[in-house]
Structure formats: C-alpha cells, structure tokens
Length: 224
Image (tube, rainbow, N blue to C red; front, side):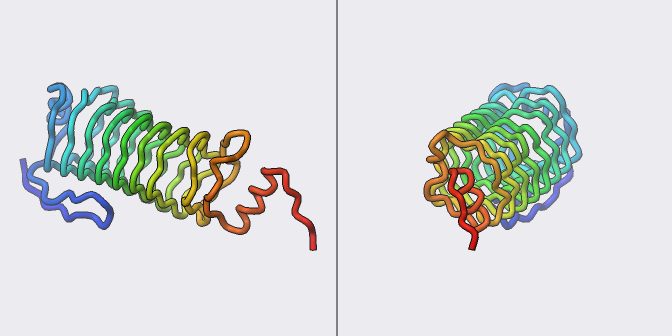
C-alpha cells in the first residue's frame, strides 16, 4: 500500500494522514468481517454494487470518486470521514452514526438515513434529492449549495442546523419543528406540513417566502 497525506478539510471531519490506499477487494473484506473496522485509508475510484457493510466502522477515512450502488451501510459508524465526488445510488444508511462527516460534490439521490444519528455533518455542493432523513437525530448540520428536493425529514430532531442556498422544494417536514432554523436563502416552496402548519412556527424566512406562507395559510395580501 502506498502512503498518502491528506489535509483536514475546512468542514467538520478531521481526517489526518492516510496510511494506506484501500481498493474494492480490501473494502469488501472489511464488509465480510461483520462489525469490521477500517481506519486511515484512502478509498479512491472504487465501484461497489449490492454489497452489505454489516455494521462496519470507518474512522479517519477519505472516499474519493467512488460509486456505491444499492450498498447497505445500515448500522455503520462513520467518524472523521470525508466523501469527495462520490455517487451513492439507492444506498441505505438507516440507523447509522455519522460523526464529523463531510460530503463534498457528491450525488446521493434517494439516500436513506432513516433513524440515523448525525453530529457535526457538513454537506456542500451535493444532491440529496429524495433522501430520507425521517426520525433522524441531527445535531450540528451545515448544508450549503445543495439540493434536498422532495427529501423526507418527518419527525426528525433538529439542533444547530444551518441551511444555506439549498433547494428545499417540497421538503417533507411533517412533525419536525423548524423553530430557529433560517431558510431565507433557500428555495423553500410547497413544503409538506401538518394541517395546522405548526412546523413553521419560529422558522426564519425571507419577505418573499413570508408572502408565500401567508397564501398557504389562506391570508390575502391587500394591494396598495
């Protein structure tokens, strides 16, 4: 294995120095161990489909330009991990634990994070449309210049969430309070809400968004 140094990104993940490169065979070997463990490795240009990680733990890892299709990462742990330019197609991370994880320039349409725990996660310039974060526990999440179109975030617990310049069109937040969350720089239209719109109480919106919400509530704006 060849050594390769990696600098910690400006986001949350503190990746440090990579001690080895890991190919598809080595990664599948970790999967097959059951509760497998991988640390301080660079996984680059790897393509995997229909594999199961089987509760594996990944620490101080970089996944770069990888393609994961229908890979099952449920119950896995990702700590100090960075995904760069990766494609995750129909992957599952249900009940996974993501701690200090960065996603940069990734496509993860339909990624399932049902009942996952996210702490200090940063997502930038990535497409997570149709993702499922329902019933997730989220503490310190930054999403910048991304797509979360028609994503599901039902009955999620949100703390210290920052959404910036992100497409939240038809975001399903049924049962998820948005109090204190600023969506004023985002595309926030046609959200899926409960019948009394209680999810919107305390949310920070732009003047234009406020007018759209007023119409949603049945309020008519008087013309000057």
